[in-house]
Image (cartoon, rainbow, N blue to C red):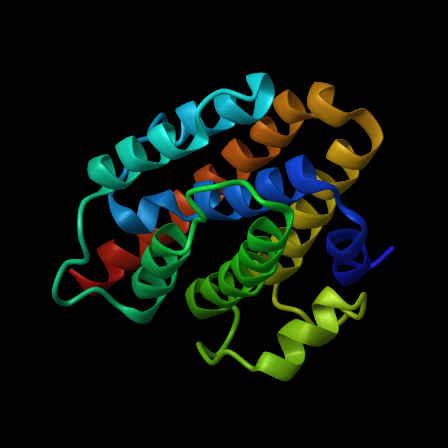
Amino acid sequence: MSLVELIAQADERGLAASGLACLDRCVPLLGGDDEVLRPLWASLADDSAWAGSLEKARGALGMARSGEDEAALLARRMLDAVPAERTPNGIRAWADACSVASLRIHRLLDPAADGTSSADGLETGRAGGADDASPLVAAELRRQVVVLELLAEHGTNGLRRALDVSVEGRRVLRAVVSRRARGRG
């Protein structure tokens, strides 16, 4: 099943986990530590206060900094767009936007790509045609699909594995960002 189809069929918790996982993998661009979004993950597991956890995360990640590159600005927009209330329509729109933004970020940062971000290419990948995707983008597509499949198949019990998938992706992106910074410095 394509990523677009999985998003269309996901329930509110699956959508929230999908968007949160995309944001979580991009935290290195915002200068956040690995635990900054953990309270939001916990609120998905126990249905506790999403809004309070969201405000703490936003406070910890601070405001936009001048000089942020396009990838960091996309990550910042994902964070800014998180709905304060987990309503199905709000979460669905946010999760879909996070999917696209995260893929675009990975495309921008992929050393094997030319640094451009074709919306058509990303949409083709989301629709199931990822054959020509760069390695970092293809891996991000797989992670997004796995998160949605885990939540669809296991519900709340899939959250732990979805978080593991996100942590793996965050490590990869952190390494890419670090390598990129060394290349500039």
